Length: 202
Image (cartoon, rainbow, N blue to C red; front, top):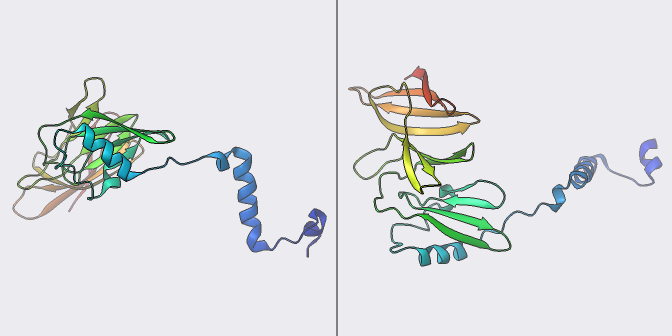
């Protein structure tokens, strides 16, 4: 037992020292008081069904959490895969669901990238049965409608969004280009000025 351990009056094996230190630090800054919201997907589904004229396009069992993004610790948005429907979910002791957008046309944005940047909700890319979507759209909460967001300096022959991910103010994207041989363009969309910069072409 070290002198430091003797001074505190107990034996503290080194393998537990980090855990104890982390617990004390977390308690001092209030982390232990944070309670994550309870997400009862069954209750959310029941509420959504009551808000919809026709819920057959929602596909609740297909990647619910991939269609779900948090704005903060008490508000989230749910955009069912393959649709332009949008729901707001407020968390308190229970979840409360509000229908923001009941879209007539669906099916062109399966597997899109749904993300939030600077308090704005975006949907990027996706595909349907017969076509692909290369557009970036933003939801206008005042009008409750999705709007096209123009991206400047894109390659003129983009055909598909293969993959994308957001890193702070940069939306990284891998495009497939419509050329005779399979060709791909990797670049970055600056989410401040909405300009595409190509990094490499494969």
